Amino acid sequence: MSVKDNVLKILEDNKGKHFSGEEIAKELDVSRSAVWKAVKTLTKEGYNIVGINNKGYCMLENSDVISREEIEKNLNKELRAKADIEVYKIITSTNAVLKKMASEGAKEWKILVAEEQTNGRGRLNRNFYSPSNSGIYMSILLKPEVISTEALFITTMAAVAVSEAIEKVTNVKTEIKWVNDVYCNGKKVCGILTEASLNLENGKLDYAVLGIGINLKTPKDEFPEDIRNIAAGFMDGTECEIENLRSKITSEVLSNIYKYYKHLEKHEFMDKYKEKSMLIGKYVYIKDKEPKEQLLVKDIDDTAALVVEHSDGRIEKLSTGEVSVRLMD
Image 1 (cartoon, rainbow, N blue to C red):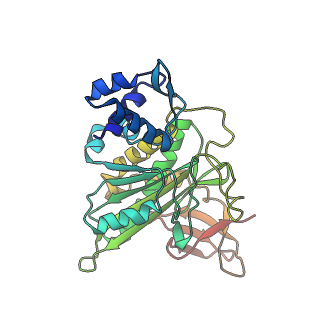
Image 2: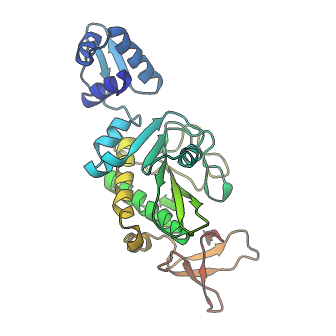
């Protein structure tokens, strides 16, 4: 570990306590100048560290900067041994960067987590708004031994993992909108994008990059106008404050994904996916298709297709790769 990482660990493990530069330097067997430089860098990265004359350095207890140390601390031993986590203050796109790493031979469970993306990516080539201080943006490299059609279940698995993580850590109720969005109080708080590389010889995946963007709160400058009425943060309107919330949510999401991924072929998450569906029993229409036809969502089948009933009673299964649906007003 670097001097910066070691200083961060000392301060994070002892939030609210003061340590002089001399004490930290002695503990780490480095110079006081090295400690000062580490603290200065951590402060620039957003860590809420104060320095007080005659008392030393202290990380305030309300600090909510995403930290690799905090994430790893809450993972089980098995996942902690496999996960290779990098945390960024700002990045172009966690998916884009991790895809490049994957093409260069990165190992499974390489994980990138960022506090801000300048070019976040969403489904159907849309941008994913990823401002600082309001969300979690992560990508996970997976190498499942499955055929390409199973890639869809990585997305559905992740939706359940995020939904369960939010509810466990905050008690905020969530729903899942087919196929890849998590909602709270009728607004989108999470989007999921899985990008896979296919081996044409055997029809299996070489790898899959699972991207997850979670909104904790509405940004100070609001969401862009085109998504302002549909996006929100899952902590909007809540009074509670949870220490290290973003790191805890990240840990819980990773732990849930690991739990389900170990037996991906069993699709153990599908019952929960259906249970949390915000569409079953509701009327929807297919976006970008005119004229709009009112369709009743009857079910989500075992292949994760949306089962809808047309006004004439005809039953159809909609594929996630072909259509996007919206709730009827």
